Image 1 (cartoon, rainbow, N blue to C red):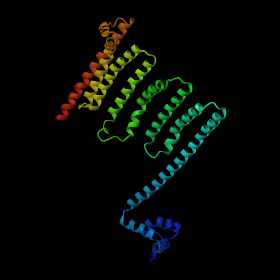
Image 2: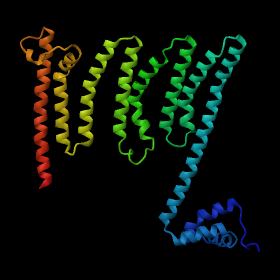
Image 3: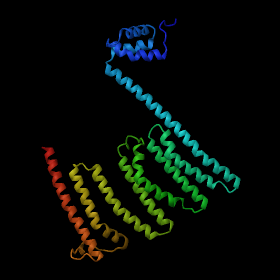
Image 4: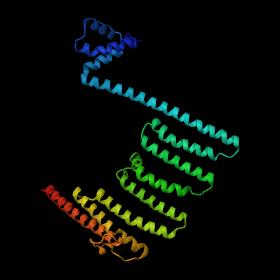
Length: 335
């Protein structure tokens, strides 16, 4: 059997639902009151809304209405963004199709077509992907952009038979990783055992690509000596970066003590890293800071020694102050 309560027009429902809060508070005019009462007898939807109004507070109703409006607005925005993405994607197909037709008519192969296609993919990664992706837009944009850039390198390398794709790609990935990899890994869901180790993974990733860059650039020209020197220098300075990372990330101490250790590491490495590299690469035994002479700022050795001495002494003084402050804070927290 059909329900005797029938649905009214949307326009009438909208008017009545606007009047329901006033009707509930008994502050609407008699004519509006009669309109609402008459409509409620025939509209199940408005009856349900009125029952909710009686059961819920005004604030709750306002919140529901606001959420509904926001959801509708968000849906419209997503729809508009998706349509814009489709339009841009269509426009990007135009140069691809034109290049394809020209390459076929000339009979010169599809190398240019491949490069243009990869270039349009790079543009799409910066424009279409952010508009059409529903979640993790930045992560998807970066991954697609890097992939498209590597495709450009690959096709250009094939076009000119230069065999330098790896030479171009490895340093590019390293340079982009330093800036972009933290954003990428932040948007990636990792297993629980790794979810709290994203900073450590970032350090490992950047370290790996640093050494791959040194090896690839030096190996491309068969520069074994340069590869050895580059790896040694990188190791010495990356070691300092790792010590600072472990201190800042994992040391169970207050901020003053962590800062003191960081200042101490930075000052010690500034003063002695060059001498360590000279010894590991050339076997030269020297401690530059021994040549300190503040009355001589002309010779290179004295200038370096003076700067190292100033940095080292300043670092030790600052680190000592921070250690004392950290000790006082730790003692106060225990009390």
